[in-house]
Length: 184
Image 1 (cartoon, rainbow, N blue to C red):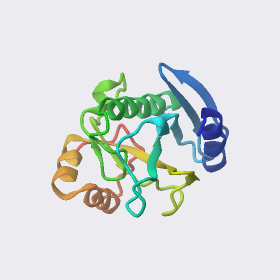
Image 2: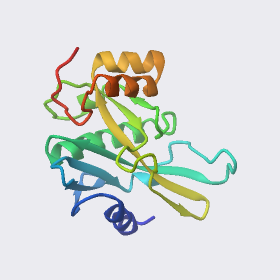
Image 3: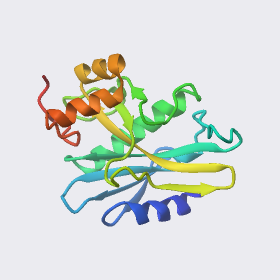
Image 4: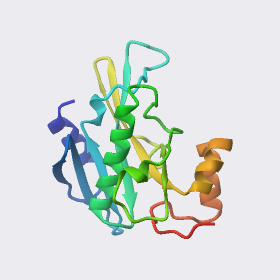
């Protein structure tokens, strides 16, 4: 997809009005959800090949755009998404952009003031299990959500998986959008 097509697609699936801007090599869409939560999504990260293909049809590439939500500012959300995009691009296909992927020390690539250090990619939550996607000839582009996590949460995810971490966060009523949450 072209950047314009990606922006059009994101405008149709993300809440509120989007603002588009260029930050270094990346384009990013930012906005606020009705609840006042800020979000940012990459535009053009789908051009980065992280090695994913459709299992049933290895000729079909799987690509994604990155998305995050925060109680903080739109600028903070954009900075986190773009740091994750940089990390994944620099991995040259070794680290897949898919749910369950951990991004160690991703916050250290930013100027964010947060209690959290790492990132985890998860299936986006706002759509109740349905992940927005675009199918093109031999390519599917979908959204992967970046959730920032603490050292302890990162260790749990490494040992038991990202799903176990998400279950723990839900049980403890931890708001993953709170990047200033107290550490256990």
